[in-house]
Length: 393
Image (tube, rainbow, N blue to C red; front, side, top):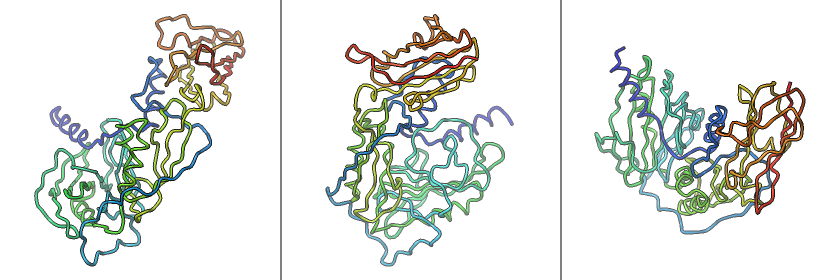
C-alpha cells in the first residue's frame, strides 16, 4: 500500500465520523484520562463533567402547547411494517429496521454491528474499520452530509424525495463499504444507509422508508444541549410540544453541571409515538448548596487509580505504595478553591509548585494511613465535599 493510498483511506474513514454535541459521560472519561497523566485541571466546555450521583427526583408535567406539525399527505393505503421491525425517524418520516438492530452501536463513529445512528454526540476520531457484514442507517435532521448529490427524484408515500445513487468504496483493510442516501426536503430529514455486505443491502434498507401520518418521532436533544447549555431543558420541552408530544420532567442532582441541562429522554430520540404520548425528560436539578456546584475526583499511583465524585462523597479508600503520588481535581464553580486537609503522617504535600495539581497533590512518604478531607471555599468558609483514606503499603 502506498502512502497516497493510505492517506486516501484515512480521509474516507474521517468522512464517516459523525460529529455532534458533546456526550457528557464520554467527556468525563476523557477528562479523567487526561488527569491520569497529571494534566492541568480541566474545565469541560459548557456542559462540565458528569458523574452519577444518587439523589431524589422531582417530577412535573408539561402538557399542552401548540398542536404538532401537520403530517404530509400519505398514500391512501400505507403498508404496515413487518412485526419483526421497528420504526425510527424524525417528524412523520421513518424507516423500518429489524428489531435486532441496536442504536448508536459505533466505535469512533463507525458501526460495529447492525445499528441505527441518530442524535449522536461528539465522538472520538480514530481510524476504525467497519467489520464485514454490518448494515446501518443514519437518520439526520435537516440537510444530509456535505457530500450528498441528488442523482434522481422519486416519491415516498406521495412525498417528493431526492436519492443519491448507491456507491461502493474500499474501507480500511480490505473491506468494501457501500452507501446511499434519501433526502426528503419538505420534511427536513435524510436517511443514509451503509453496508459492508453489498450494494443490494443499501437499496433494501432505503426501500423501508415511509411516511407515518398518525405518529411522530421523538426529537433529538443533543444539538439543543450543546447550543443552549443550562437552558437546554426548557428548549427541549418546546421541541416536544411542537412535535405534539407531552413532556414529563424529572430532575437529577449532578454536581458540577449547570442546572437545567438536559441529560436524556425516554423513549429515546427517533422512537415513533402517537400524538400526545409522554416523553420523560431528565434535567440537572438546582443545587442545594455550594457542594453541588462542583465535581471532585482523585487519582493515585503509576496506573492512576481513580475515585469519582460519588465515591469521595460517600467516603472512599485507596491504596498506594511509598513514593507514589496522589492528587485531587475539581470542575465547576469554586473549583479553584479546592483544598485537602491531611490527618496522618503517611502523606506529605508535593512541593512541585509548577505541578498541574499543586497544592492538592501529595507524595506517599511512609507506610500507614492518612485521611484526606477535600473542601472548597464558599463565602469565606470551607465546605466539605468528602474524604478519602489513603493506605500506604
